[in-house]
Image (tube, rainbow, N blue to C red; front, side, top):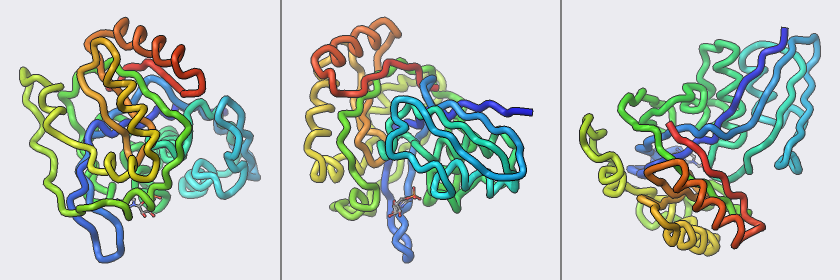
Length: 265
Ligand code: C5P
């Protein structure tokens, strides 16, 4: 029997870097949500492992044991044929292979959250709004995030995650404020939080600054920020039509950019 799963884009609404462990990994405090856009995966049990990749971002994605999706199947103790429709830019701060791996682990009911496959895999294997702490190993469900209308933008800039962490000017920043209670303006709360990797990523890929400026110039945006270690950035809007109108304007002015209106929850 074939299992189908959806691997949503992972968005870090906040990403505070609060310290560094002796082994070099950084301590994080991040509010993570998931989009209604993502990669599509199927898994059909078979005696041997195999993987077929297609979709708009399939170029450069390994079809063998180097792929996190393949590694996730191995971690779950299964073999079979995997298909991956790569709809999301990868190496882009929105989950990429981590979301693929997490979605498969979840669909297979695997107990192992997949930290060994990457720091983002546990939150992706949970797959719903969560506060992520530690190096990514501590995942606490968060109930009161309202659905958010967003536009995601990736200009094609590539910023390797280790390089962004290395470029951090300060590693012992404050953590997130406590999550807002019901009735508190969520966007106002978000404004007071940060992505501590954003400035570091801009030093490596100044183009990210241009993406953030283009998002900031959109009518009706409430908040503009980078996700993860970049380069994908997002803007939030009050309504779906406002997000769609902004996406249309951005895509028209920047035909080379990946621009996606979506709902985050
Ligand atoms: O775990 P993952 O493969 O996603 O991490 C990629 C790189 O990002 C790590 O090798 C490390 O350099 C950096 N990283 C970190 N602290 C984290 C997560 C990632 O320093 N909590």
